[in-house]
Length: 299
Image 1 (tube, rainbow, N blue to C red):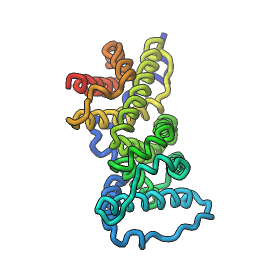
Image 2 (cartoon, helix red, strand yellow):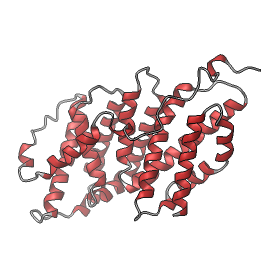
Image 3 (cartoon, rainbow, N blue to C red):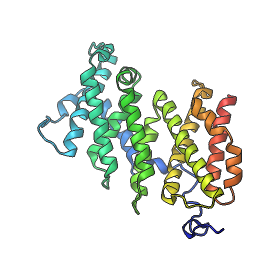
Image 4 (spheres, rainbow, N blue to C red):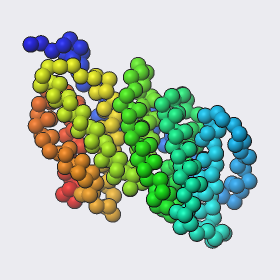
């Protein structure tokens, strides 16, 4: 029995994605903008005077991001001033102020989700600024723990939404937009707590798709080629996160992934063996991820 023509290898061969992912996370220049934003924030002496007043009655997409971005910019600046001894501030009190912190984080993440669902190019400056503020917040050693204690579930929801945006996008010209989403996931991985849970989420998605692809191949049925192509972005993000994890000697690499790591590695050799002829590039990514997982376990 022949395979449905829409699933023949001549039409459904591996995506043309390059296995080299060095530039995948800087397609829109957000990474460089992030470093520039860090430089701007460090000039703290007159920073607060330069912040424009807010029009809180405005209801546009831009304004929905402006308020939480402004709040967290001020919070980060106060933290920097307190670190220099210019101000005295007890940031442990943030954990008692549930509404302000959680509401601001929710607004920021919801606003980013809206933009990633309907992206515009080039990326608006206020969107880049929102990304930079979020990354600064979750990578700040003193603020991140206080914020994540109250907003971890919301951050998990945000990561899941971004992953689904990647998987479900069926636009013909989707790859530039999806690269910006994958870049955001990579930036979230800078936080150790968020990185571990993100690795688990990605392992689960890649494993489930590999199993579905194997089943479709064995019964000669069609599969979702668009999702197959989008899956390569998740593989690249996962590989980057695992590489960062194993390079940081102060972190126990054997702990990340947890149960999902065990599920991913189980029967993986057989999956790769069956898929390698028809889907060589995807099989290569599966193998590379398994190598990184196993190398972390040995460390």
